[in-house]
Length: 346
Ligand SMILES: Nc1ncnc2c1ncn2[C@@H]1O[C@H](COP(=O)(O)OP(=O)(O)OP(=O)(O)O)[C@@H](O)[C@H]1O
Ligand SMILES: [Mg+2]
Image 1 (cartoon, rainbow, N blue to C red):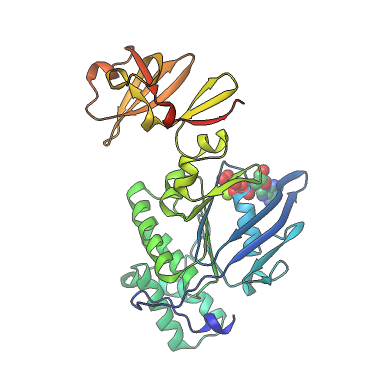
Image 2: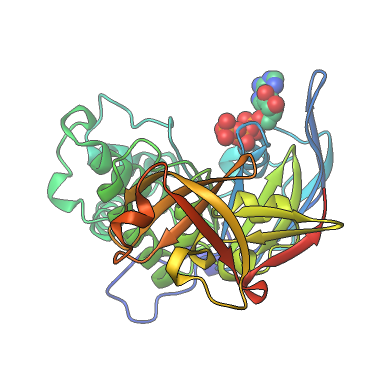
C-alpha cells in the first residue's frame, strides 16, 4: 500500500474525503481454458473514480476478466496495470483490491464485525484502528447496529451490505463486483444500488461491476462495456450507448428494440418511439399488424403486435384506448424516420 492510501479512511461524513480509486489498464489480455478461448484479446482502461460495468450474455467472459484483474486467474498473455504499476504477476493479497461476488460468502461462524475486521487483522492493524475502521465501514452501509449478528441471522440484503463493508474497509484501490445484487428482490436491489452510487460518489471509488441486468447497468454506470464472446464490442456512457449504439447487436442488447429491414438498410426503433393506431402521424412510416397482448406497466402500456411474422413491442401512453390493446385487434403501428436508428442490413 502506498502512502496516499494509508491515511485515507472511508468516512462519509467527511465533506472532502480523499479520493480512493486508482486507474486500471488492461492490455492485450488473452485467456483460454483448455480449448475454450474465453478472452481472445481485451484492452480496457478504467479511469480513476470511474464506475465501469461489464454487460454481456452468459459465457461472454465477464467473470474471467474480473478474476484476472483480481489475480484469481493469470492471463495467457497481456498485462494488468493499476496506477501504472504492472500487477500481472502480483499475488491477490498484494493488489489491494476489494471484491464482492454473488457467491463470495461471509464467514458463517464470524459476526459481521469480525467478518469486516478480517482483512485488517490479516494486515496486522492494531486493535483500536480495527475498531475504528470497521465502525466506519459498517456505518457507510448502514449496518452498525447489526455488527454483533452472525451472517445466518441477516437478510440477503444485509449480508450483501456486510460483504460490501468488508470489501471497502481496507480502502481498496479498485472495487470489483460480480453480480452482487443478483439474488435480491427488486426493491432491495434498488435501495442497495442507490447506496452504492452514493458510496462511489463520496469515496471516489474505481469500480468494475458485472451484471447481466441492463437496467442495473444503466442505473449505476459512468460507462458500460458490452462484451460478446470474450470481446468488447462497444463501450460508452449509458445514454449514448442507448441512443446511438454502433451496431444492431448493441441496440438489441441494451434496451428493447424493434428491427425493420428495408432493402440494404436495417432500421431499429425503440418501443417508446412506436406509435399505435390513432396516435400515428401523417409523416410516420406505417405498418399493419395485430395486437397479440398488452400489459399495464404503470408508466405505459406494453403492447405486443404481430406484424410480418415478427413481434413488435410498443410502449403506449396509459390513456391508450381499450380497443387498441385488445388481443386479436387489427392495429396500425409506425414511427417517424427521425426516431429510428439505421444500420447496414444483417
Ligand atoms: N474454470 C474454467 N474452465 C473451463 N472453462 C471455463 C472456466 N471458467 C470459465 N470458462 C469458460 O469461459 C467462458 C467465459 O466464462 P465466464 O465465467 O467468464 O462468463 P460470464 O460472462 O461471467 O458468464 P455468466 O454471465 O454466466 O456469469 C465460458 O465459455 C466458460 O464456459
Ligand atoms: Mg460470471
